[in-house]
Length: 390
Image 1 (cartoon, one colour):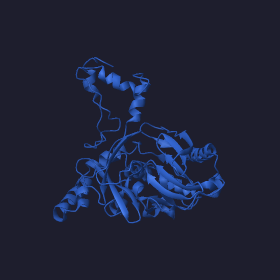
Image 2 (cartoon, helix red, strand yellow):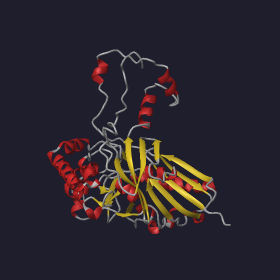
Image 3 (tube, one colour):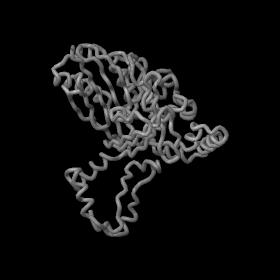
Image 4 (spheres, helix red, strand yellow):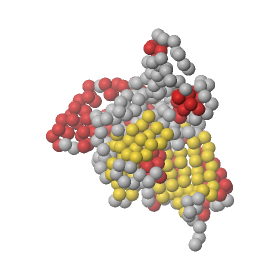
């Protein structure tokens, strides 16, 4: 039997990885490059699209070389990407209006606080709760507890639409295409022809309704998001993704799947049954539980996202996230507290009494059950007493 090969491309916040597997799921080729994050101002976290594209093309090419294979021998490509990171570009020229604004970016923090505290939003949530009492609809129950977060795309996109002059003008000219990283990547891979996103990536933006499986009309109205700029939402797997442009690696590679990284991790961990749980720790920590064919309406901080949709199979997940894990470890390493992350276990066990001093890892607020983006360690208490231990 002729050997078949699958290429997987994963674009995270820290690394870009391309792995090639044979029919026995053995790795026959791989390449890993780092993602360069830019910090132009305090709280801003960006990725340069030209730098990223160059590395994506190079990492796939290097993995093909490592496997001693040509692109023509690859049967399929599967893609997973970081979520909520987005970019906008011109429909006519293909030129971007700004760099990728990542999910870790805090430039819209003031907007997040203003909206969460606004009478308008409180009224909307109260109305949703009243509708829930009448209808007992999970959708309205979830809406009554919905909070805006910096990790969602919604208010960062609203910030861009308000503050980037070229983008504002392009909206008036109907010359804007919006996309999270997966959308932009598929657009580039297919030679600027495909403008789609899969359901798992769409549901992580904050303005896609997992209960109706449509872009949320209320968000379009409140935040002036042009519907014409949004990509078509498609299944997680299928031939609708078409193939890569042959000019990239010498031949076309069929793209058969595109999926948000956290729910891709659920799939890879075989969390196929209701109640199955995965917990992954990378740049952040993400907890996901399979909730089956209906979205979960939580008031304890977990929020519903779409896991995947393949044909008639639609699977949801309830998710809780802490946005800072690797970043906190890196911060502590830079302070010289330890060299190897494994050393932290011994450090923790060697300090029986901290004299009441605790470290709260709230670099980007606290996740569930609080979902409080304003939470932070209070340095005032620390300043009033000497630190017994470092």
